[in-house]
Image 1 (cartoon, helix red, strand yellow):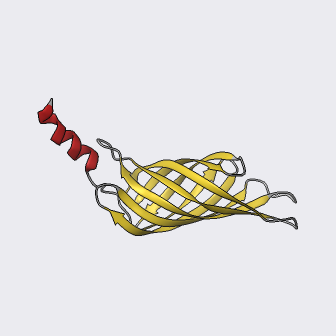
Image 2 (tube, rainbow, N blue to C red):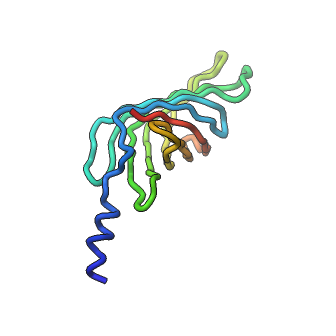
Length: 147
């Protein structure tokens, strides 16, 4: 058993091949659709990449009471899942909900976690769940380009 420990450690600590310097994508969520983009700030060897990510979303149906979402968060990406081409990410940040007509802007903290995988070349898929300090929960699927 002890002779397999170095092999298991190497598999768990391998740096992901999909680490990106910048990324951008489009998402379809339970509440609407949007875009996101980010940039790497600090690669952490054998762990992942710390980056900054922003996003903007619109509801599926725009009415007088609908709100647009803009967010900015600190993300930990490229968390390698051994023996797969999939990696994980987690983001913590703040969001603003902007009413489409009049009304008051609402602010909240949010947390997001998900998985990313390859499609073709620099394109990949992403799936995520999100929760906010305002008590909302959502999920989404998207496509992402990594540079």
